[in-house]
Amino acid sequence: MIKKKENGQVKKFRFRQALPFYLFVLPGLLYLLINNYIPMFGIVIAFKKLNFAKGIFGSDWYGLNNFKFLFATKDAWEITRNTLLYNVAFFIVGTVCAIGLAIFINEITAKKASKLYQTVILLPYLLSWVIVGYLSYAFLSSETGLINNSILKPLGLEPVNFYQDKTYWPYILVFFNLWKNVGYSMIIYFSSIVGINTDYYEAARIDGASKWKQIKYITLPLLKPTVITLFIMNVGQVFRSDFGLFYQVPRNSGVLYPVTRTIDVYVYQALMKSSDYAMSSAASVYQSICGFVLILAANAIVRRYHKESALF
Amino acid sequence: MKSKENTVTQVLSHAVCIIFSLSAILPLLLLVIASFTKNSWAVTNGFSFFPKELSLSAYTYISSQWALIGRGYLNTILVTFAGTAIGLTFSTLFAYGISHSEIPGMKLVSFLLVFSMLFNGGLVSTYYTYINIFPVKDTFWAQVIPNLMMNAFNVILIRNYFTNSIPPSLREAAKIDGASEYRILAKIIIPLSKPILATVGLFTALAYWNDWTNGLYYLSQRKGSQYFTIQNILNNINDNIQVILQNASTMSKMGTSVADLPSTTVRMAIAVIGLLPILILYPFFQKYFVKGITLGGVKE
Image (cartoon, rainbow over all chains, first blue to last red):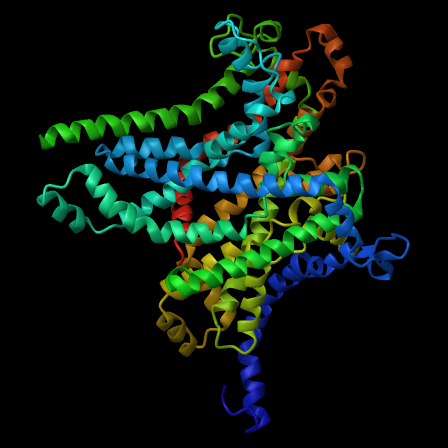
């Protein structure tokens, strides 16, 4: 900052210079205000006994009662467990498959083939969850699904009523999440692998290291920073779930809720289907606050041990 | 010895990639084949990669319902265009503003952006805001404004490009020549930033094209359905096939009986129609798309 008090002229001049920049950020700031900051203050809904006649701010305070009601139900535990466990499973399965795939693609010497594989494997990432819902239905439907009609029946096995049977859903959801997203993470890891200095591999080859040893001692250790960065981003999101996956693929089947319902689905249903502002706002605020605390904690830990990977 | 290891590696790599590629593409193929299957055959034998009887009736039926589906398409296109244009404008201006962190207050503005990524009010209070405080319910803007318009992450990508890839000397030279900030942004910065703007624009457009949640939250079946995009229509049909079958009377005019309605295969046909533009355009934008993923994955 230059001496501010010197005279008014300097200040005015500087403001005129800066004015265009303030105008540039203005529309975006207004948008952030409407889309992000007003809703942040809206979390007070969770601490109020909402009365529409009085509006949010006029409604009576209700303390932590909404949260008490929420955590008195077994739903609260169920949706938390589902959200957390699915995120952990998605991250582990997704990372292992994406890194493996990226290493294999990198080994392929035919450039055209490598390009083609990347293009095809990335394709599911471009589809909306609604369409993925249709795809999964074509496979899983009990009447017309491919699995029941073309696989189980010819083998003489009992048909499975997938949308009424909880057993398979953890695998189905992990599968569809992987199916849609593996291409995306594969590209990230592939670009990291391509960026590794080829001298390392050259030296290893001269020393007679096998392909497997090169992967184990060069590729994997050098991918660690990328994995760590993606890991922190995931830790911060561990209370969030992909609403599309958990809403569209199980087709909102009530029998499946114990294994398919996550916090986001619960909030949506409580808000839109049963207009239960108390429960939905409590669940939604619980999710926001836990997520926020986790992001800060994860970042603090990373700052301590691996400063370059910290997000802020 | 070495060349044997190489052959094994090549065969193994191709095998793994082929397995993943097939599992990516086969479900889509099933969707397409199912939409061309004769409805009665699909009902008795299920969807199959090798149906014995084919039929175009699902598509004939869709063309008879074009008023509904065509409007959905038109809405998708309008929403995607409006959202991407406004979003990209807001994001570029904002990114250029915060790239000048020497200006008083800009650090705070940057912080407000980053903080919006870390904490959010959640669905309930966002919903309340868009219903009561900034009402967009049952308007066209319900599809455009909530959630998707300015992605903080994309803004940061653009800002990084401005600070890392555009030499400051260009701006200074233009300044000496007496160009205003508006001119500098329009004539120097934006033309030089085409690659990043194309990438961010592409991601934004894809997010709008595939979005179905805004319509679900902020458009009611009764008053807002004229703004439904193709994804909203698909979502509704998934809930309730009656949406598309309610005009069964038009079928009888076409000389088909209601019993012949291809209700099973028509879902698949509509999904194919929703999918088609992405499949057609994908080869053209694939390059920018991959570049965008790489930019986003590696922190700068």
